[in-house]
Image 1 (tube, rainbow, N blue to C red):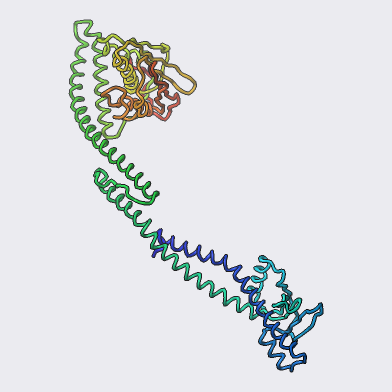
Image 2: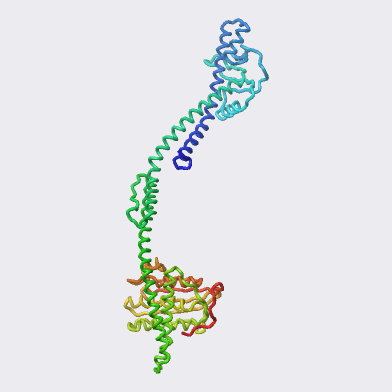
Length: 474
C-alpha cells in the first residue's frame, strides 16, 4: 500500500480518524478509571476500619500497618453520628497537597483532575473524601500517594491505545479493500478507456459505455462519453476541412497562374481604340488584381499565415461605391435589391484597402443574397462615420434576418452559414480580417425586419505598418 495512491491515503486517513476518535474517548475513560480507583481505595479503607471497630479494642501497630498497606492509604477517618473519628493512622511522608471530594465531582472537573494526575510526575500526598458504602457512616476520608494511581492510569491508557490501534488498522484494511473494489476498479477502467482513446481518438470503438453502479462514477463516465463523441466528431470534421483546405490551396495555386495571364492581356486593353473598352480596362485590371491577391491570401491561409494588414489612407466612400457597383452588377438580373450609401464624401480612414474591400464585399453580398433568397424586394445600406476612438461602418438590410443556428455560430467557418448550402466562410474571413486591424465585427441586430452588422476599426493603430498616405483610385 503506497501513500501516494487514493487507497493508501484513504487507509491512512481512516487510521488517523479512528485514533483521533479514541483520543476523545480516552479522556472520559481516564476520568472514570481514576474515579473507580479512588472509590476502590475508599472501600478498602472502610473494610479495614470496620475490622478495627468490630473488636472494640485497639490493634497492634504491626497489624494496623498491614491493614493500611493492603488498603493503599496512610490513614482513615470515619464520620459517624456527626462524630469525626481517626480510625487507622500511620506516618504521612509529606504534607497533603490537594483534597478531592468524590461526592460532588462533575464530569469536567473529573477530566481536569485526571489530566493533572497523569501529567504531574512528582509523587504527592492527597486527601480523598467519599461516601461510605452500605450507609456505614456519613463520610469516609483517606490520605494516599498519587504515584500508584498515576502508574495505573498510564497502564490503562497504553492498553486502550493498543486496542484502538488494532481496531484502526483492521478498519483501515477493510476500507482499503472496499475502496479497491468499489471505487478504484471503476476509476482504473475510466483511465484505461481514456488512455486507449488518446491513442486513437478517431476510432469510435474506444468511446466508453457508462455502466458504473455508483452515481458519481456513472455521471463521470457519461460526461467522458459525451466529450469523446464531441471530440471524435470534431476531429472528423477538421480532417474533412483539412482535405478541403488542401484542395482549395491547389485550386488557388492554379487559378492564380491563370489570372496572372489574364491580367497581362487585360493591361493591353488600355491601348484599345474603343473608348468604352479603355474605360472598362482599369476596372477589369483591378478586379483581376484582387482575384490574384485573394488566391495568394488563400494559399497563405492554408499555411495558417493570414497576412498582416498593410495600412494606407483612402476615401471610404469611393471604396463603398466600388463594392456597391460590383454587387449591383451581380444582382442586376433579379433587380430586387436597392443599394444605398450614407458615407460623408470626405471621410478618409486608415486600413488595408484590399482587405476592407473583401470585408464589405462579403457583408454586402450576404445581405443581397438574403433578400434575393427570400424572393422579395429590399434595401442594403452602407453607413459610416467616426468618433474619438474608432471608425465605424454599418451594413444593414431589410431581409428576413438570420436563422437562430446562424446567429449561434455566426463567425465560425463551415458552421455559421446563413443560406442553405452556404459554408459560413465569408463572415469568418471578414471577422478575421477586422481583428487583424485591431477592431471587431459585431452583429447589432437580426430579426424579421432585417439584419445590421457593425465594423469598428480603432484610429490608434501605430503598431501596424503604414504603406502609404495616398489612396489608390481603383
